[in-house]
Amino acid sequence: MKLVSAKTMLETARKEGYAVGQFNINNLEWTKAILHAAQEMRSPVILGVSEGAGKYMVGYNTIVGMVEGMMETIGVSVPVALHLDHGSFDAAKACIEAGFTSVMFDGSHLSIDDNVEKTKEIVKLATAKGISVEAEVGSIGGEEDGVVGSGEVADPEECRRIAKTGISMLAAGIGNIHGTYPDNWQGLNMDVLKEIGETTDNIPLVLHGGTGIPDAMVREAIGYGVSKINVNTECQIEFTKAVRTYFEAGKDKVGKGFDPRKVLKPGYDAIIKVVKEKMTLFDSQGKA
Ligand SMILES: [Zn+2]
View 1 (cartoon, rainbow, N blue to C red):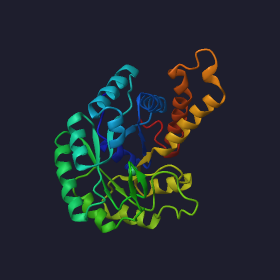
View 2: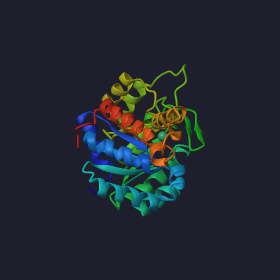
View 3: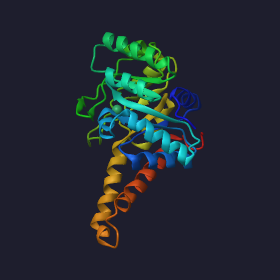
């Protein structure tokens, strides 16, 4: 199956009351792990690429080639969207050109008027190619590629305005943050989420910072219209932990244990485990 836009998969998820996971990729192993997990779980999936990861993987063209080639060879038959995560205006344009099937334009640091205007421009370019667009209102706390947000709670009126630009999905800050959550975290603001859901005409809502939100809270948020949940940190933590265990056990010093394919295998397996667990929690398994 070819890469698809995230629009239909998320509208279906919104209607049927589950969420599709966005799992960020960093290299070949991560991509392969997430694609295999999605295929095994019969789940739609979104591969997220931050601008930093895009540079690391030698540019958007390289990534499109890698993902498309891998999907063909594995024989992936579930819907997969290749999505730019927290893109600048220029990065969104570059990904639309490069063959991504979904882009996020993050104008949350702009005034709402500028955010609406710039989002409209991206929507116009993307829609002409059948590419889905995610916009953001109210910056999401924590750090993403060096940008530190304070974890604002979005204004439902601003959400209503940006939802009308023709975007496919909306990320709104509701107290969620990137990275790990501090011990004194107040939890997601469900009242605001509910209000945003009501003012944005059933547009699929996106929950960033999916690592460390209690399961019950995740399910409650899905009930209020969250149809896409971004998971990144958890895969990183589990990948690194598994590779560290390999070294600590001295396995790299046994036989050909120094082979990089053997070194990364425990990390690869750990990502598969996280992705499958999330798909079960989000209830997207068996939906493709
Ligand atoms: Zn994010």
